[in-house]
Length: 395
Image 1 (spheres, rainbow, N blue to C red):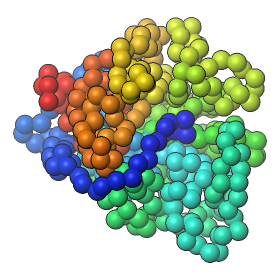
Image 2 (cartoon, rainbow, N blue to C red):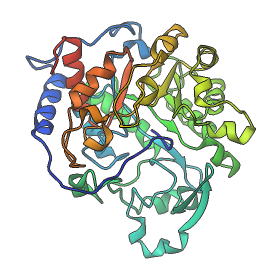
Image 3 (tube, helix red, strand yellow):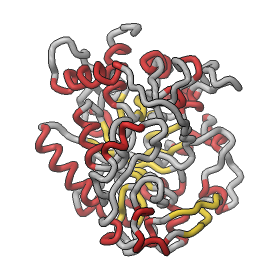
Image 4 (spheres, rainbow, N blue to C red):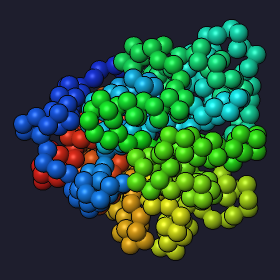
């Protein structure tokens, strides 16, 4: 999930709260079906009947880049922990291509912030400045490396100021390819005795297409090879570029979702083609009806569900949930995180950037709008929050 997403970084202390331990135990119990765990989640999508997306619990808990609140994102360590903590879907992964055409899982094509590439003197001359969707970006880029070269790198924590404990795991995992993810999905499905779902995102498809590295066709080819290109396949595809999702709609039968950033933003493919529409135009009833002609869902930023005021406090919900549902679309907004800087001001506790706020209160507020699920860096917290919400517990 997204380039367009604002990722706050803040310095400060390293204190975790007891919430983590309680949440891990609680979600583990829910995942194992232990006594005292949640009753079945809501059933707007069918509550396990009918296959496909209709088989998913509602609200759906989506592990954002895995369990990235606890492990470096887009690693098999993060992905497997998300499943262990009860995630219904794992966002595995943000897809970017290598120089030799392989799709790998990284938050961005720039990998200086998520790998140890800067510690590799043999790659020092690969550092450069590029214009990425109109933004000058300096670092190392996946399209300048072969897969074999990328496999010599190891993943690191992206926001260590907020998650210093995650740095313990720096260097433990390599960069996964999406083909490896598809094989991992099959393995985990067999091991766990239940279907594992994934939610890959096509990153910067217009940028890569101009480089001769079209990602939609590569993704479609892999999905067809592994028999996961159908309507009921356990793979939902997302992108911030509507034309990329339209392209995928012609290539595969998978459920598709258009990601939506701030109301005043414009998708980069719109910028490139001169389409004057903004996200605000896409979330009107007419815009949502058009999206529904080629996609099954949207992934809006949480601010499109409930805007914040100038002090960062929540205001009144918009009509987006109602309007999207009327258009036949599901909503999976992003991103819930436990740490104070990422929560609405209403739910922060103190100013420690590594401390947890009233996360359950925030989840409850967003779930009450009728959203169909949510991306979260902390799947265990999301599972417990859903349990409380479904069972009418205000805690």
